[in-house]
Length: 253
Image (cartoon, rainbow, N blue to C red):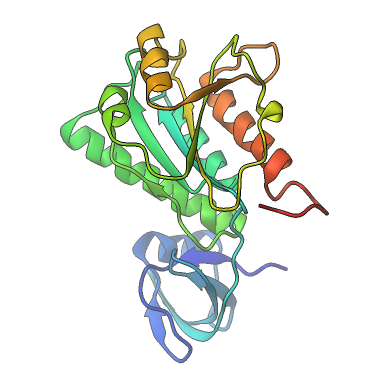
């Protein structure tokens, strides 16, 4: 049986005793009903994991003894940052959760012209903290030991105006694009990928034009138009099949 995993963003080392974060402790004590002596796995979020054992359970406080550290990594061989236009309802939660499971290295939420969801100020900060929590929970579930950052929300126009990083392949899903994802050459090991996905209704024509000027190449995934909550996840899965860790038995980039 796999030991429960908990994100514990404090320095972890063999021989230390640590208190689980409040939410993790509540889940461990009330939902999983862990007891003293039960084995768990802790990870800080920046690589590696630690075997640990429950030492004390007091209501919503759970203390664990760190037993040893293991240099375990489950990151994808390709580094893909999902640039996702804000989606309405709980679609962003789903997209972030599944993107983390599919190996996305980071998520950048952007406000596009057709985004139904509008966020600013305190509402934006609260939603951003929630989304980062979704990413943490996804890592706990899927076994990743590096928590992808959910970046600050900004407008797509402002984000596109920033200089592009070096050695990056910029892709955007666009119905009617001249080439498919499968037609692209395999990226080199040093190449990072940025994947731009529109909101409900897709990207506006002027946004598509601006993105192309910023170096984004339009690609399509078959003849059908995908919903915003499907498009990014389908593209991530396709990339993993073509170039990443779904390529079982092949050399990875």
